[in-house]
Image (cartoon, rainbow, N blue to C red; front, side):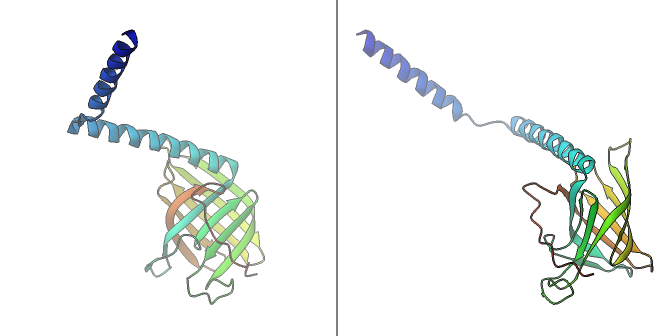
Amino acid sequence: MKKIAASVILVLFTITAMAQDKVPLTRLEKKAMRVEQKKQTEVILTQTTAEALHSGCFVLKADQVRGRAGYVVYVNPTINFVAVEGKDAYVQLASTSGIGFNGLGGITLRGTITSFDLDQGNKHGGYNIVMNTIGPGGTLTIFMNINKTGEMASATVQNNWGSRVDMNGVLVPWTGTGTKIFKGQESF
């Protein structure tokens, strides 16, 4: 008899628990859950971006490229990027046509970083980077602006002869889940 009573009580508790799971959430509860999830995601992205920048291993995956004349081209972020790995910096512009100096329809430049200045703004917590590189393709000056989460990043790449390219995209750690990039053959 005790086993039957215990079984009935266990079944009643299970049914009660299942019934509570099916109670729909109100709009305010759903909104509060979304806001909390957004805050948690922002905290994680902020920490990841700070660690990547301070470790010196990050990639700006560009989905927009703007030339000197101001025209904007939407590009593939896996083959258009500015990357920093320790003391080396890579700038790659490519297209999916597959014809070019780097085998990807564009150019890949690698340079050794000669100066790297990282500054974090106080108002919104964004980052400003100014770095100079020297390599077989010449010297480059790279200016980067990154928001604190890395979701909005821009880079301006200039050489000695006045050529300039602006890239907009997202900043991710060099070794991470969202890093998938394809580096072409170095052009020089």
